[in-house]
Length: 160
Image (tube, rainbow, N blue to C red):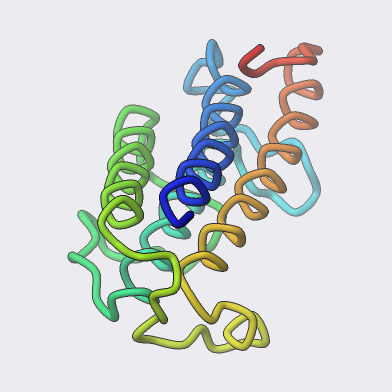
């Protein structure tokens, strides 16, 4: 049963990751680094945030450690001084690491670390970490969908 459930969870998580990338496909560096909402975040920085989230949940929380970031942590969330190639490579790398962890770890494995807010009480095993990442990725894909429409009017983007 664990393999079937794991396959289903992986399919849904990978689908949402694909949506994020598809929504942004075709945008140039100027559009990827343009803040169009009053909060000031940029599409590229949101992708970097999703990479941080993958790293945080699958590595830091589940295993209790993560490899060092390839750059110093930035004080301002949802902005980034890095370019698209570097950010997208970071995101893809973190997703690959998460997929490897998921493939090698039973779903009922308890996290070594605890997330500091109420979400920590809800993430009692790898299964719930994956469910959280599906929700987190889908939520931000929705944000990116709106921003893409504001940037160039395109809608309905993503895998078909």
